[in-house]
Every structure is written in structure tokens, then in C-alpha cells.
Image (cartoon, rainbow, N blue to C red; front, side, top):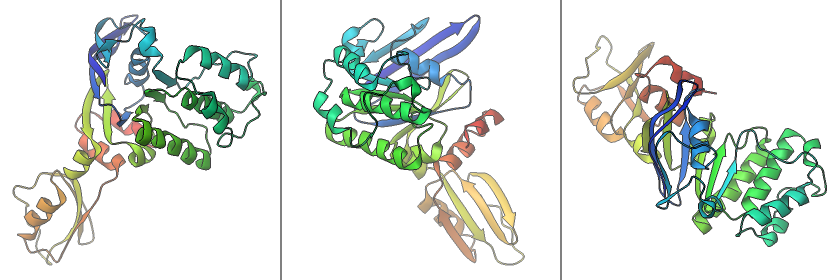
Length: 298
């Protein structure tokens, strides 16, 4: 379990983290989202032990991360600006990872050559950005980590490779109980893989829920009332209402079944509940914070 408690970090007077709190159960896939500058990357660097917090606490399975070699050996991290030695080949970086990670599996490294068809004797710096990202996943997955911390992980990968990489990670979640924390602006992609989601804003985690809970507590209704009737929906928490012709499109903070039952009291001609995408949920859920939230959209 990853526990982040009231984390504070200040850089030159700027409070990058302002009491950030997060909890991630083992074996889950947690999507972390937020506008640029919200503190996502800073938070991930604290969880992986790159930064030391000014205040607060970070625990992984009850142990502090900072300068804890045993805990760090259980974490594989792929940051947005992945580092490799300037003249290193893939095979040489494999040897480095093998020395750093006690659980590193050469057998799996060799098995993944089929998934990542890149010459292991190639100098990494001469590979394209997408191929370098493939190498990062190749080495991380071969390390057999308990935790994977990912920052914009599939940026630069083509659609086929993105699907392949997610498939490999989800296999590890299912078979090994690997825990994945991923920060991304791509809400559509995270919707397919995450079971929990959180959003950061101004250095805080302002929303943290299971994806199922989010989807069960907000719904889009498309309603056509009888001609000449525009009833006020009493007791129905409408977050947004737009109209095209006679069709009302309403975003309602209720479960779909309760929302339809509430609307049917007004005897509409048509009333239909439509599932919201993760992107739509965040836009309407967080709309009250500030317009900055819109920058998480693709």
C-alpha cells in the first residue's frame, strides 16, 4: 500500500505540494490527473524517493521511502524524462538494472524481446523517442517490481505499442498483484485501465474515488418533455442543462436508476440515461474549482 500523508514541498518560495494526501491499495491501478503545474510530477518524485518532503509522510507497506534501498528496489519508475547513460546499449542498461533490482528476471527480459523488437546492442541515445520509451518499459517490466510509478508513460508510442504495453502491465496486475500509479492527461486511455482515480490541483489531491463510484454517482440524461411543458425538476441536482430543439441534455449528480425515476414523475415523452466518459465526469465534478481543470482535456 502507498500512503501519502499531508505532503508539503516548497521550491524557492513556491509551494508545489500543499498538504497532498493519497492512498493506493495494493494490486490496484490508480490514475492521477490534473492541470499543468498541479504537482503531479513532484508528487511522483517524492513517492519514488527522488525528492525529500518538507513536511508530511510517505509510506510503502508501512515503511518510509526516503533513503530506503529495500523499498526502492521494489519500485520501477518511468518518468516523463527517462534517463539513460549516454553511450549505453540496451544490453548494458539491462546489466545495470540487474544489479539494482534483486528481483530482475533475465528470463523475462529475453521473453520480452518479442514484444519489443529492438536490437539490444543498439546505443539507446540513437533510438527514436518512441523506441526509447519501449526500452524503458522493457527494463521496468523485467525488473519484476511490486510498484510501477509512471509519468505520461505511453507518450510517443504508436497505438499498437500503447495497447501492447498496457496489456503487459495489466497481466502483471492480474498475475502478480503489481500496483500501478500513473499520471496522464489522456483520460480516455486511463478510463480503460484504472480502477481508482484522483485529481490534483494547486498541490492537493482534491478528488480521490473509485472509477465505479464516480460512474454510479453522475449520469447524463436526455429528456424530451411534452410540448409546451418545461417543468422544474425538484429534488434533482442538475449540474448542467443544455437544450437543442426539444431535447434537454442534463448532467445529474445521481445514480442512473434514481435519476430516471425522479424524471419520470414529470411524464416525459422520452427519458434516457447515457453513461458519462471519465473526461466528462471530471469536467463536471471539478467544474466548481476553477476553469484551470479544462487543461486536463486532450
